Amino acid sequence: MQDYFGHHENYVLTHTGDPIFASVQGKVRSPEAFSSRANFIAPVVARLREVMAKVSLGQNNPYEALAEVAIVTPLELDDQVAIVSVVPIISETGDIMQVPGTEYLHVTVRYIDEDLAHEVGLPIELGNVAFNASAPTGELTGLPLKGPSGDVLAWLVWNPERPGTDLFAKLLPILLVVGLMGGVFLMLIVRRLLRVSGELQTSEEQALMDVKALKQAKIAAEAADRAKVNFMSIVSHELRTPLTVILGYARLGKNLRQMPSAKRLDVLLQQRDIDATLVRGSVDELIQSGTTGMEKISRSGEHLLFLVNQLLDYAKMETGRLEVDPVVCDVQEVLEPVLDQMKILTEQKGLELEAEIPSHLMIADVTRTRQIIINLMGNAIKFTDSGKVSVVVTDSEQKVHIDVRDTGTGIEPHELEKIFEAFHQADLSSSRSAAGTGLGLSVARELARLENGSIDVRSKLGVGSVFTLSLPKETPETLKEAA
Image (cartoon, rainbow, N blue to C red):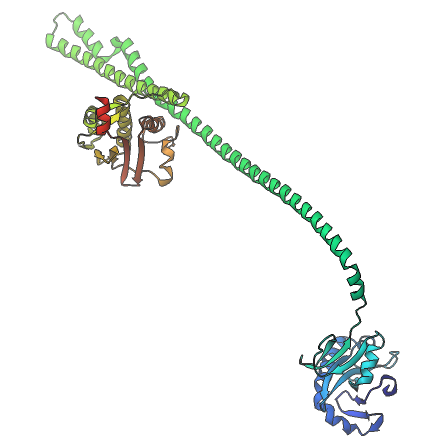
C-alpha cells in the first residue's frame, strides 16, 4: 500500500489504540514511532471510532457497513502539512467474524508536495498545479485545505484554463445584438403584461366593491324589510287602540237604554210619585256617562288623526312632496302654544315642565316647527316616568337652538343615529312602554332639513336625553330684505 499510494507513513492500531506496526519513508520501524504522531492523530481516531459505533449499532458482523467508513483530513505534523487517513481494517469477504468495537485501524500519512500536486492535477489536466502556504493571486485559482478545526493549512493552486474566453470575445457582438433585441421584446411583453395586470386589478377591485355594495344593499334591504314588518305590526296596534275605544263607546251610545243610569231613570219615570231630585241625579249621571264617552271618542279620534297625519307626512317625504313655508318669526310665539298644549300631558304623568325661552327671531315654518317640537316633547314625556321635561332656547351667531331635555331612561349609544330612521324604534318588544309608529323623528328631521336646520341628540342611560332643533337665525340683512 505504501508503494502503490505513495504514503510516507503507515501505522496499524489495535482496538485499544496501541500501535502494533509502523512504517516511515518506506522502512519498517518500531511501533513506538507512532508516539510522535499520537497526540495529533488521536482526535481523528476518536471521530472514526464514534462513526464506527453508530454504523455497527445493532449488528453482529457489520463488515459491509464498515467498508464504507473512513476519515481523511489535512493535519499539520512537524511544521509540515499532511493528508491523514484513518480506516478500519476489515475482512474483504466477510468470512472472518468481527465483533463491533474490536476492529484494528490503518493510519496513513501523506505529506503534500509537488508529486502529490501533480497526481491531483494530472487526471483533470490542471496547469501549474502546486501546494502553497498562501492564497492564490493574479490569474491563479485555488482550493483551501482546512484542518479539523476549520483553519486553512495550505492551498492547492493552479493556473486555470479558460477556453471559453476567446470564443466569448468573438461572439460578444452577436450576443449584444441578440440581447438588445431580446431586451426590447421582453420590455414590450412586460409593458403589455403590466397593462393587462393593471386592468385585471382594476376589474378585481371594482368587482370587490360591487360585491361589497351588493352585500351592504342586501343587509340594508333585509333590515328595511324587518323594519317594515315591525312597522306594520306597530301601526296596526296603534290604529287598533283608538279605534277600539271609538267603536266601544259608539256601541255603548247605540245601547244607551241598557246603561245602569238609564235603567234607573226609566224606573223613576214609571213611578206615580216622581222625585225630581232623584230624576235630576239620574239624568246628570246619564249625561256624565255620555260626556265621558264622547271625551274618550274625541281623544281617540285626535290620536287617530295624528297617526294618519304622520303617515301622510312620511308618504309626502318619500315622494319629495313634503313642503315648508319659512317666515320670520319669534321663537316665543312659536313655542308658547306648544307648551300650553303639552303641559296637560306632563301634569297627567306627574312631571315638572320647565321652560327658558328668551325672544329670538328666526326663519321657520311656524306650523311645521310646532309639529317638530310637539313630536320631541311627546317623546320626552313618553319616556320619562319621573322628574321633569325642559325646553331651553339659546342662540349662536347663525342659529337659534331649541333644546328639549328630559330625565328619562336615555338611549343606547348605538341607537342614537338609528332612531331617526323610518320605521325604527329603540324598543320593539311586545311589551314596550311607549306607543308610536317610529316615523315621528324621521319626519321631524326631514322637516328641519327643509327649513335649513338640523336635529341633533345626545343621551346618557339612566340620566336622560337632549334633542336640539337648530334653525336659521334672522339677521339684520334678512330683516331689511323682508321689509
